[in-house]
Amino acid sequence: MSKRITDSQVLGELGETAIKKIVLETGFLYEQRGRLEAGTDGIVELRDPKSGAPLGKLLGVQVKSTGSGQYVRENDNGFEYLLKPDDLKYWRTSNIPVIIVLWRKSDETAYWKDVSDCVRGEERRLKFDKKADVFDPRCADRIGALTIDRRTPGVFLPPLNQGEDAIINLLRVKLPDEIFISTSPFGSGRDAVPELVKHSNIRFDWVIRKRRFVSFFDPREYGTRAIIDLDQVEAVDTKLIAFNDERDDINDTMDLLRRTVERQTTAQLSFLRKDRLFHFKAVGVGKSRSYRYMSNINETSAKVVSAYASKKKEGRGYVRHHAARLRFERLADEWFVVVDPDFYFTTDGFQPHRYPEALLAGKKRLERNAAVRGQVMMWQHLLVESGKHEVGLFDADKPAPLLQFERLPVIQLSQAVPESSWNRTDPRAKEMEAQDLFEEGGIG
Image 1 (spheres, helix red, strand yellow):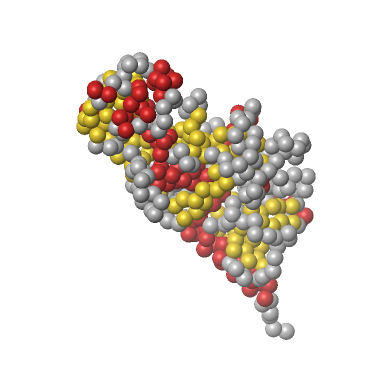
Image 2 (cartoon, rainbow, N blue to C red; image 1 turned 135 degrees about the vertical axis):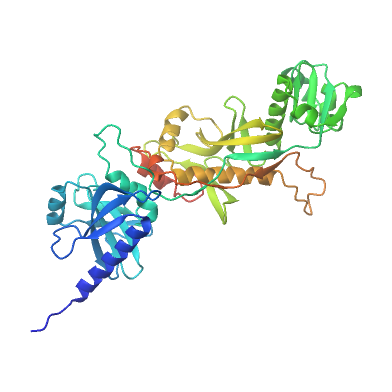
């Protein structure tokens, strides 16, 4: 009787070949076990991509191949897989970590899991996330982390991902050519405000300190004429104030820049003086909203105001606002704004939440590299757009922005920041991530 090679055997060989290719493209070493394997198809050894040196860190790989069809409970976000009892029993005796990789021929997808990363209370059931658990070179650091014996002090595993583009959270600020100064009958801005609000056509992007008024606009053309000495107004070269080393001039410039940004972004943002925090405005009570922006290449959007309903008590939900602290710094002969993304919480979109610290801690634990990177790009886009003067049919009388912003070039890092270093654990993580998928429209 002649020998036969079954379709199942061919499929298994195709799957293992596909996975071996991915391992080698990642920069690791792959050793096939051969016909005598009893539960692992191959052994992966980690390798430093910079020096090429093998690291002596090993893990086992079991490849499960399928031709087509869906996995258990498969949808656009993930699926489940049930391990065989004999396989699980064997892997528990292994002295190296073991991962299972599922490969599907029809769409050439590959997903992986640590075989011990089971659903709580169901040791055989694995849940796969189609975004987080893709088996490709980007998972190098997560796989490498499995090989570390954390009981050994001083263990170090170098980053295994290759270099990546780094976005600098600085923007260059282009100042107006002129700055207006004048004496004022008021010693400070706080003293001047009660008089200012008695008049029409008022604005607050100015500074008064020690009876000196400073602004990027002509104060005689607005209600601010009531808080200055009109005969003392003078337009001077901005550099005389903004690039002076006197402490008062530096402080005046930083305050003026912040207040000018507040005015330029008022359609999108509110500013909390107590917390020195800019945050996206809500469009209605308990309503979510999104903001469209350009990432490095494509247009995308972010839910910048997210409303969450309480599962326990009706009307006890909260609203999360994307926020940022903007810090202005002078470096040599240029001014820059530093963007530090954050979050702000309200009960309904307008009233401050009584316990924001607990909500903030939970959200921060979910942040990863991609999330923070996306927030920085979003804030950069908003600031750059705030400095553009787009005159349309109904904007003929709209004044040009006083400040413009310029992104700094992306820099290339020699190695990527390990994604695992951004990972956080939080018992509410799954719940909060799921709620982030709510459609716009408000609480409930």
